[in-house]
Image 1: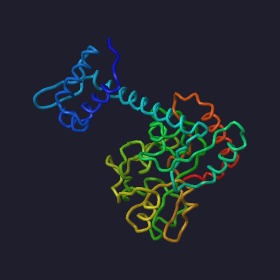
Image 2: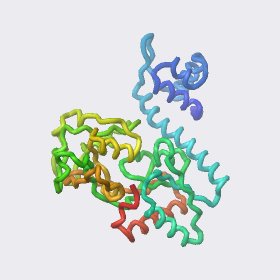
Image 3: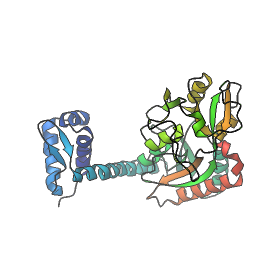
Image 4: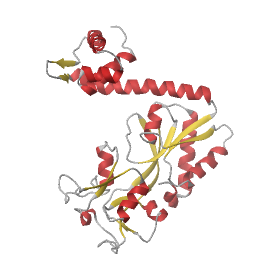
Length: 315
């Protein structure tokens, strides 16, 4: 069997995602007939049908669905390998760390101090707010390692938990429950929750809405109905989330560190006893054998362990 080329996988992925040869050709910037010929050639190479074609629609066969899933990983892996090689050639003594701007810096400072004490450790370069998030920066090859909060898309990544902290409800200061010492998720049934722009991960959506699995044995939240809590305004960052809550347009669940960093008269932060915690992790490519990455993760774990009470240092 002839080797499959990355170009052929890209062609197939476009068709498989669009399920339309015309739209896929436009997306690829090519004419439709050569695209159809390329897909047919790929099917002959593999000896299996990837697509079911009719005059009305295109659908994936089981083999096609498998190739779409695995082909995405392969194409992403090739792109990441090229990006890492280019970075290493241009910056041989740097380790790029993806983080989110606006978070606390105490943990990052402590990690940097520990890395600086190692004479063979590379210089650290911080990459802020990569499109798609810190995990995407590592998967694409734009960064070697990331410091981020769960949940995130873990496909293709290994990770180590650095810090764990509880989450709390953030309410308008004049909310009927703002004076409570503690809440359960059911107490906020029916309250609108902000919607994160571009959020396509069901696990992340459930986490932010508080409908994910509770941290201890017990039933999952069901009091808001199958559809979950009502949608509040769309937001793109933590400050927008807090502003939306302060204006009385929604309530939300946030890491406890947010309460300590953003305490103000317009907001009330109340513990929630049956809410999953927030974790800060280091994440890196699962196939990585880099000593520099391993040294950074070790320094990060040590820095977090020396001040576990400072989970507030990274939000």
